[in-house]
Length: 285
Image (cartoon, rainbow, N blue to C red; front, side, top):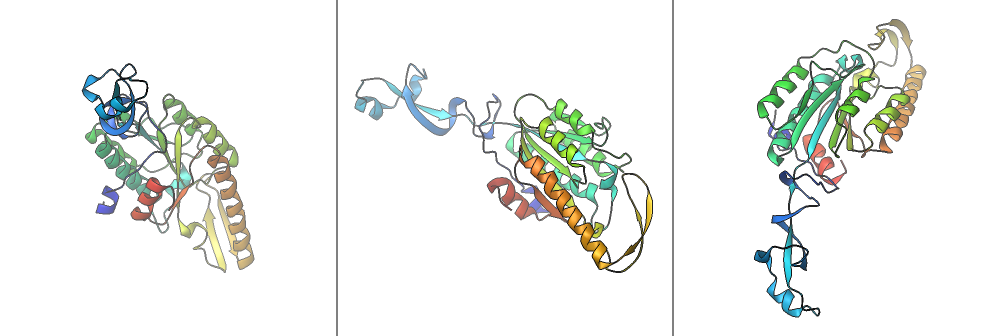
């Protein structure tokens, strides 16, 4: 993993209420962190923080204190699609890219003091790959290595609902990694299952799946989800029709997701880590 991946950082546009000290804005007040406001001593009874100048100038003659914001931690959950469509290897290895992203995010959580959890899914939530939230660096590394070595062997993404149930509770930062070769019903179900969280969809695209196909020729194609083979006489009009259908399918998927999520980040064949970091910090790639 290169240095740009190790330097990956993220931010949240909301405040957390976690009592565990971290690096994110919170609703909590404490003795450290950034200055928040000045309030009466009766509201925040900490005489060590008395604001003398503000107290002397207060028209109500109240004793005022400075209140600081206590930075808090969050829970980060990475949901990875490991259905059979993710087994496609053309100009990239989708599972390897997903593992790279998960590894970079795990390093980021370790640096920020956040917990990290990994929930791979296909038609079920994969218990053999699952890692529940933890601060353990060794556990992170072990789970990501198991993901990297995994060969997808089941179609479908119904396990996403199980993953959503597993992370129910307080608001979390959720990264949803997939190629999103899903029916639109699955995207709507995902939006419903994860609606209470801050969702960051990450699309992994292999250009050889469609754009890299030749304009002319006989192609022996196999559907990884169903296992069916088909001999196709490729021609420019057919390729254009497939591209239009794929574009329409992607638009429907992301419209369903974006009702409850951030904008989707797309990695085409590889990950531009600087662009990904900019996206996570500023909301634009």
